[in-house]
Length: 189
Image (tube, rainbow, N blue to C red):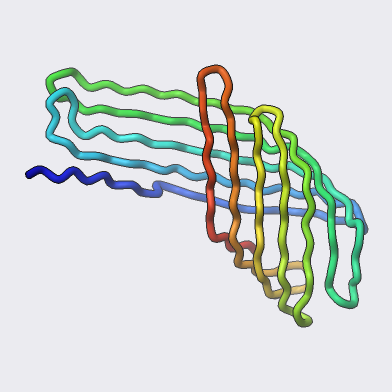
C-alpha cells in the first residue's frame, strides 16, 4: 500500500506596523509578507515531485483621527480609512516523469478601500488591551480584518503587543478566485 504525504511549510514571513500621530490626526501602515510552499513527492507516472509556492504581500496605508481619548485612564478610540494593496504570486513546478518537466507562474494585484476603528484601554499604568476592526472592498468583493491584543509599555513611545489577527478577502474577477482567511498570532513593538 502506498501512502502519499504532502509537506506544507512557511518559507519566509514578515509583519510590521508603523504609525505617526500628532494630537488627533494619525497616519498608520501595516505590512504583511508570507511565502508558503508545499511539496508532494510522488512516484509519477506523468510527473514527479510537484511543488507549489504562494507569495502574498499585503500593505495597509491609512489615515485616521482620534475621536475620543482619556489620557488619565489610558483610553482612546480612533477612526481610520485608507487602502489595502494586495499582491499575490503562485509558482507551480512538476519534475520530469513520463512527460517533460513543466512550470507555471501567475500573479495578481489589486487595491481595496477600507474603513474601520481601533481602540485601547489601560488595565494598569503599563498594561493595556487593544483592538481594531475594518471592512472594505473595491478590487475585491469584500475584505475585513479583526485584531485583538494585550500589551505592555516598555518606553515613553514604544510598547510590546501580543495579539491575534484574522484577515479575510474574497476576490473573484477575470477568472481568478482568491477567497481566503489568514489568522495569525502577532507580536508588535
